Length: 142
Image (cartoon, rainbow, N blue to C red; front, side, top):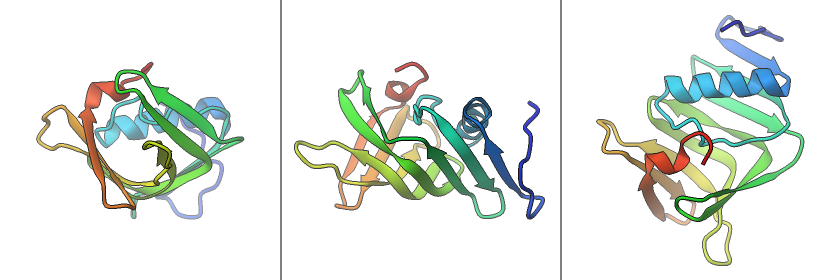
């Protein structure tokens, strides 16, 4: 895949502009780190950045997006800027993602896919609550 690097302060930092290229890069990163491809169903992405040495990743979209994952009937909100640290099957210190629980919208601060695989994905919130679902609930197109 040919990804145009817009800004290159160091050889390990990539910044992509434009929705189509950002979605391609996002899918590449999700696949590389062992996450389901439908985990970040964003619209109108304007920037994606990744610093390989630290695992820091960020995405910016024009407006906040809500998405309902139908298999598990879970409504998730993605802010205009999402950031965190990614490593193999783990996202930590997430900002910009919230999942609706009853009448509350607690922030999701970590996502972990079981390794070795059990087919489960775990979401941790600031409230100390962890929810576990089947990975296929977050497949592309869900």
